[in-house]
Length: 64
Image (cartoon, rainbow, N blue to C red; front, side):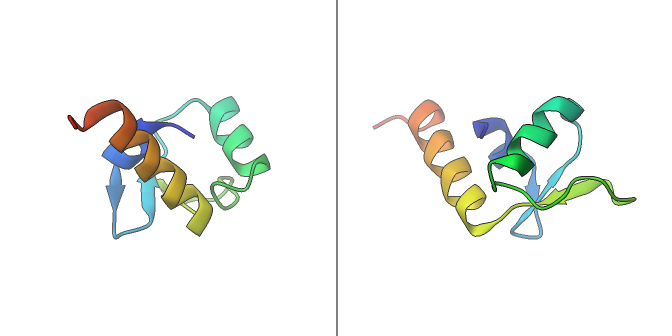
């Protein structure tokens, strides 16, 4: 999961599909996002994906 996904979140649980398809497929295989193969321009993050994205964002971008 990438902290960058957290930066593109909208509607609380969606992220834009501006990522490499191999990356999106790996995130899907690991259960972080729902199936990215559809006509929408964004992917839906799972609960686990949201938690991991937020954790990585805080780890790499928030000053303690």
